[in-house]
Length: 203
Image (cartoon, rainbow, N blue to C red; front, top):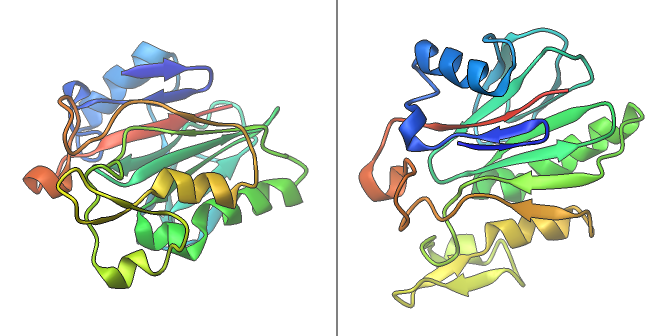
């Protein structure tokens, strides 16, 4: 597990954080947060929820809170878990290419800013890298200026680069590695995994 200030990114060794409530309890104890988390039914969209209590917040891919003691979690196995930190608030987003194209992360930043919580830093957890994120031309053309090539020389997209550009110069930190070719992560593309890592943040 990668534990930072108000942020944690789990690895495969912590188990399936999407479905295993005992694994959630162990992670919560390790980082010192309540065992009940706020979560969303992830739909690869750009809906943002303001959160005041743990539990299922409905369909969406981003949440934010300024309430202490309410951890926020999204679950990934190649997509990006993105955390936004403000002085007295935190936000988290689940961003695959559809979410990135739909602007889920800037939508989260905008809602936090509208409530007076301007993010000062963004963090992205373990994710598939442009080294391995093979896409078709119809996806590549959605992200002009952010296309790349895989290590086997097929079209790719640099999704962390897309998010960095959308946040207009906000400090961004990458944690963890490429879920596809590096050991220790769940990867849906590599193994059709149903298990998921968690991206966690809390006030």
